[in-house]
Amino acid sequence: MSPRYERLLHDSLLLAAARHPDKEVLVTGGQRYRYSELLDAALRLASALRRQGLSRGDRVAIFMDNGWPAVVSIYGTLLAGGVMMVINPQTKDDKLAYILNDSEASFLLSDSKLARVFGPAATQAPSLRAVICAGPIPEGAGVLAWDEALNAAPAYQPAGTIPVDLAALIYTSGSTGNPKGVMMTHQNMVFIEGSLVEYLRLQADERILNVLPLAFDYGLYQLLMAVHLGATLVLEPHFSFPAAVLKRVEEEAVTVYPGVPTVYATLLSLHKNSPLRFPSVRRVTNTAAHLPDDFVPSLRELFPNALIYKMYGLTECKRVCYLEPELIDAKPGSVGQAMPGTEVFLLSEEGRLVPPGEVGILHVRGPHVMPGYWRQAELSAAMLKPGRYPGERVLCTHDHFKMDSEGFLYFVGRTDDIIKTRGEKVSPVEVENALHSLPGIQEAAVIGVPDELLGEAVAAYVVLLPGATLSEAEIKRLCLSKLESFMAPKYVYFLNELPKTGSGKVRKQSLRELVTT
Amino acid sequence: MIEPIIRAFIAENYIFDSLQPGSSDSLTQMGILDSMGVLELIMFIEERFGFKIPDEDTLPENLDTIDNIVHYIERRRETAKAA
Image (cartoon, each protein chain N blue to C red):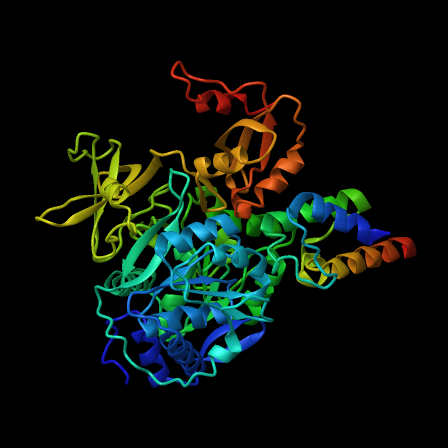
């Protein structure tokens, strides 16, 4: 039953459970789980999914908070031959319905706490064969109890999956109003795991903390790397109570601390009030947004035994580059060089290689590059360009970078108007669509504005319909009914009219200049 | 009465449907408060009730359910009175 080596993503769980079944794989929700327990539960779920009619390649939506059922669902789906789609539990019903239909998902695995969201969404998704729900089951046909599903026998029947089969669809916001499903094969993801643990210099005794959503590839790979290494994951649902998370770091002797700048800004402000120290941590990583150089001295106080990694990536290839921690002082502002087994280069708008010191568009080549977006041929073509040999596809990041004479990369800016807030992508169009759907709003425009804690904050400029009265608080609250919380505007400004260009488009640059007052 | 004040703050800012969180429901697990929501709640409590919440008190036991929030505020008021 045990594979000879990791060829498919879930092989790492089979191998680890065979080698050290009693080793701790997961600490979460006040419980500890061993590798044998995770494999057993995942096999039972896989059996249940197969019995319910899952065929190889079927998409399985996992709509849960970070926790044991989510982890079981990820590996259960893979063992059954399915394609996992982990969806942020903050997603509201319309967007969930969109994702279920776009992917033609066969199964939805969720939790009863989210029933008021998945209930309406599931009724709008005819492709669903079944909904499996942890916790008390809400009323409604076709919802299977999680505990009942896990009563299935844990017999392993290989699904015939091969490395070029899809392992995951990772939905990501785009410049249009709708999210896109980044396709990732087993081959992509196994390669990525290997490259990450190589440059992060991780070992089998790691205790990796994850507070980031498993729906976010950065969070998901903390789990995947932990199992790949045969190490332990300390899984928290969020970073809302930093003091509680930091207690966990100490209690569990966490060795790897992955964060985004907002998490580090919060830590630094706690540290200023009362000095903190986490000597067990050996690796501190940052991605999703720029880590200010002036954070580094304080991070060294917080994590005196850690190597600090500045990195950059995008969902479409998971990660692009990293700066060797020994170079953090020598190369301030840099995000380093391509991760092992991959290449990067900068091209001008006309497609010519750009000399050192000049700005160009970053292109990425390697086994980590996505095959494309699920059923979005045009959007895929905009990202995937012809490569060195016929048929090869190179990823165009559409981000501006500079490279110095030694080949180190420096992020300059995005070419789209995606907002990055708390390390999360927000599409202004998606927020504008939500605002336009609110009664009382005539017109709205959304931009990102600089924010010390968040990186960027979402700012909405609205024009109300004549006679309509809506307060800032009401608008924000109504946005929460449509959008994930990090997408809801932090600021709402009321204008009599939006500044427009000659052709009638909103002049967002003018909005940026309006900010203060 | 503290509870109605807290419920009103949460309902006005974070609840968009007819959901009524139970007094011992985890506000973060229900998706009502996220990390920004918790910060905003802390600021609201500090302003409305007139005391600072130290970092070490920002724990789920004090802030994650309506019951916990009410009890935390009551305890702080008791210690302020005794001082």
